[in-house]
Length: 130
Image 1 (tube, one colour):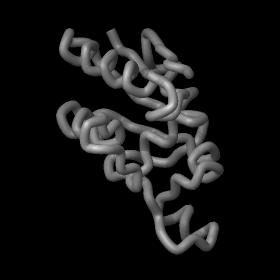
Image 2: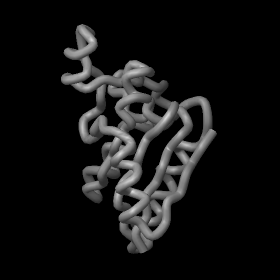
Image 3: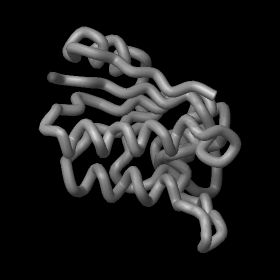
Image 4: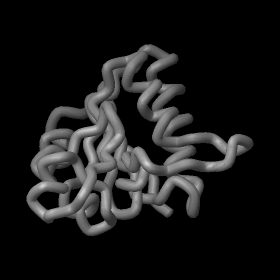
């Protein structure tokens, strides 16, 4: 079965991002396909390369990157939610005249059209909210 995942919660203030990561891992281990993981609202913080959690805590952005590398996942952070929360790729940093970008490698900033496409292309869409 083909799934898409929506992550709405910030990585360190709600369990939703970690639960979504575990759920996605379980899906892939069970032979299912994940069409896309869409990070929306506070969930875009999962794409923040500058996150530096303490060493005894899980580094969620890094864990999502590892999962992408293992399974070639499509990790999309909502561009409007990302820019609003300071998660920028090089193009958006330049457009908003910021000195640097911080989008983690493996993530893409894109619009809600990607979310609509995910809902159209997937058999199931699972949302993890705060």
